[in-house]
Image (cartoon, rainbow, N blue to C red; front, side, top):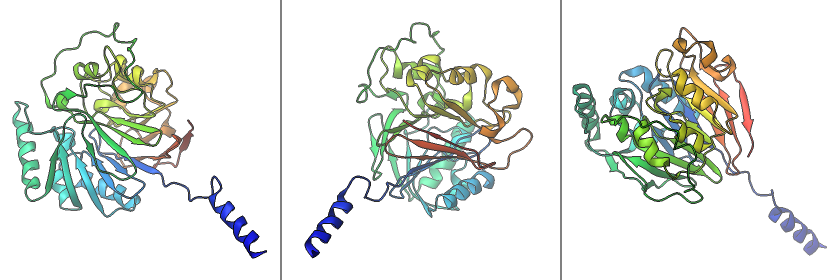
Amino acid sequence: MFRKMLFAVLVALLAPGAAAKSKPLQIYSIDVEGAQATLIVSPSGQSLLIDTGWPGGRDADRIVHAANAAKIKQLDYVLITHYHRDHVGGVPALASRMKIGTFVDHGSNQEDSDVTREDYAAYQKVLSGVRHLTVKPGDGLPMKGITVRVLTAAGEHISQPLPGAGEANPYCDAEPKPPTDKSENARSLGTLITYGKFRFLDLGDLTKDKELELVCPNNLVGTVDLFLVSHHGLDQSNSKALVWALHPRVAIMNNGAHKGGNPDAWQIVHDSPSLQDLWQLHYAVDAGKDHNVAEAMIANIEGGSDGNFIKVLAEPDGNFAVSNSRNGEKKTYRK
């Protein structure tokens, strides 16, 4: 009798669904008012912050607030996409507030601009005595349970298609040839983060000339579930050939009230095949009502910024949920 009971218990424990449910991947799109700060926390509790917002304490405090919400006490990695002030400017203030394990970037600044040289110098001062990695396309970061893969860096991109990618891109022929961008934007460190079947793409401020190298004539990336709209929704980025080839199911635009959210770029993302929803960090005041989503899906409304964030919880089966910290609005997207 005892053996039969023991056998029954073992069968129950080994049955599908009996194991503990996988912890979600957490993604916080933090309001840094038209800059970028995206916090990623792996199921194992490791953390990656992509960019640090503007200089000063406000954005650093908002990053700390998001870290507290995610229940982490340090940042294992801080990845700087490029050296413009709205991405690297917050490094000194953040380093004074949180322990940072490793900084990750694309290498030295190559932009001929006084303000960029100034911000790069301030960043270099913080790097002294801290672990630092320079990465190139094809590299990754050792984060348990998720894959972090570098797709673009320092003006270069992956040379071979990712698994399942590589098909001819039908949107390339109609794409106008963009001007060459010599700024740090074109050198953005772009990453693809994968958790099981879930795929999240963040290309920083990568501009159209470099976007097209990544997806034309063949799409080297494939499709994604979640897309962080490039360059805050400005039309120097977000080419139709890129966005439509990615077929994102959901997009998040990290625009400000008066920065980003350009109507042309917004429309390309909004009309992308397979897109179910577009979420925004701010109401784009200058774009008008026709080029903003419903208020329920905007974290910060016209006329102010309360630091509200957009949170994503993703499962390895590809299902994920997006919520708005301002009003509790939440939607679930199933594979």
